[in-house]
Image (cartoon, rainbow, N blue to C red; front, side):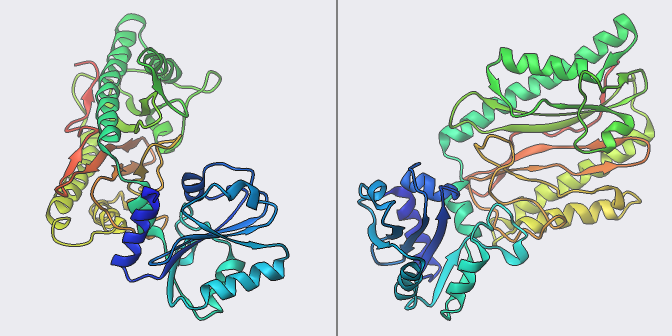
Length: 393
């Protein structure tokens, strides 16, 4: 039996759930793609994994041809929509509790894939429907040893190139009197290419007020100079150029000076202490109980809210990291702001911690990558910035 199916059945048994029901249309569900492979499926499909019985597919007769090789599944075939609804009713009505790809109030977009009409139809059969959110993290987002090794290597390269980028700013200042956001961005891009690293978008290099826009990025036509006294934010993400590779996603702060100004240091310490507190919380609590993503966001946010800068932290604290095309994975986010992420923080997942302060004079963000190891220990794979880089020191 497919390993994914085995994992799902184990989860269903451990959580006393009768079945996992996945409606899909034209390969629009990533899990069905992983299980069935990409096929020419043009009609509505249901993939059902019961706790005890053999998994089965409810499929249109036209698509049956492309599913006959699926030995792990029985096929239930329909022609008309009335036949499809009858098959749903006959197949599902003995279930008491199922899970589907839904989330409370639709706040987890990467989970909320099941359409309203299907969910309502099944609910009207007096079936209790729960979210598949925790199952998807367990099944889709855990790093294996190869994944984790690639993440470690990507972080080592990223940290090295980060140092080179700040040194490049210093070199520019000392030789021509200024540097440039786009110039430094393209320097990082070149170093990624030289190290055979993959990235979906060019890194963020921003100075002063530009850094108060979390997703500001320079371009050839829109950029700012980097001068003495400026505050510089560098947010950079890339992975090894390999199918199983995991991203490194880090943000470090510097000031173009020999010593760090008190205002810059004050805000930096607020963010650093908040991250430190979150790491200690994870070290303490993960071994004792279920910890959910929103709890870590709330702890960090509460620390920043103790200062005048609370209203200027305007995004979630962190995002899942896995081997997607972008550094934003499908797993547990560190979020009690944009959503209330009640998914568990489990072993072998990775996520970012990246609180920020986006004030009226300059912006600041710290970001590292956290991996939860087999002993529920949080490992800061992306390093941990202890002080602002004095670029001209």
